[in-house]
Image 1: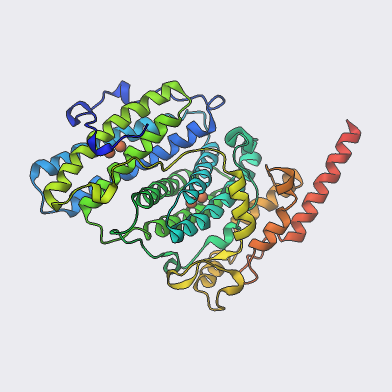
Image 2: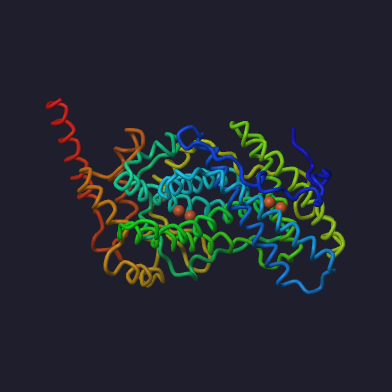
Length: 442
Ligand SMILES: [Fe+2]
Ligand SMILES: [Fe+2]
Ligand SMILES: [Fe+2]
Ligand SMILES: [Fe+2]
């Protein structure tokens, strides 16, 4: 049964402050946690980071506001900060950076695939599909290092719910920033679903960027450090791309309302979906807290904008993040759209054969990969280490890997160390031969 969030009182702000024991929760066990409990925990950390940061921006930029309202914005920001610690520190200390990284990319793939299938705006949906194939390839690249560095199989983290195989190759994700800018929705006509969808994925991508920025240096392997730098840079582009979909003429109070509404919707979904009873208790408390925030900012919206909040957020909960396996949908997009590229002037995406010869991203890609693309080196290294790359997918999808790579690779601006389709085929054949030999010995 759904609720009208504007009619709920939620927890009053004065009761929301928690003590240190309540803030620092008991972490989950990495061997036992359901992969979608982990994705919820990773996503909610990103949502809280965005919620916290926005309150600071709000108070830095807004001059015409009563002191007591400003103080309440600041108090709410502090609560977001406490919630963020709880969410983020549910991660156990023995979950390595690479294991967490696979979790982050699983969030990106399965969240974006869900959003895409539940997005009413056709243009926004295409952008979700476009971003989806890039994070899908990141998961594959990191999986190589997780195996080589720590002996982690992809299934240890994604638990067979998300395929791990080549997508649109990462070296082709580097674009001219101007091309990453998409056309924004119209705040007067866009549905609340579109607004919440974008803010949800944007928060996730921003935190993915931050996580790589702050953890990529924690490994000694130089190629791995370079790969974190390379993929972090793509996440920066994802932040640029998703934020550009938002109507920049939304007022700060409108944005404030949308931030709290997005938090409410996400925690509401977490409560509905959570299988871990202990963690569910946090989602329930946090939903109550967010309903309290929404009440407060709704009153401010009415006071300063003289409008009904329902005009912006509607009167129903939006479901932004139903985490479940999206393999069928992702495979469909993968086979159809690996060759898509960003078109100029915010136009719909084009295939490689349709983009002009002077496409602005070629220069960026040539410069970024002029010595080599780290994301290609990791496949080369996996070939030396393991005969072929680390892949986890159905036999049917595995059989299409070389043709997917062929479709995704460009002719112009390809790094000289690229694993080309014929080389990948050789690696696969060699691996199969070795497996047969092994069976004979055993
Ligand atoms: Fe929050
Ligand atoms: Fe990614
Ligand atoms: Fe991303
Ligand atoms: Fe909040």
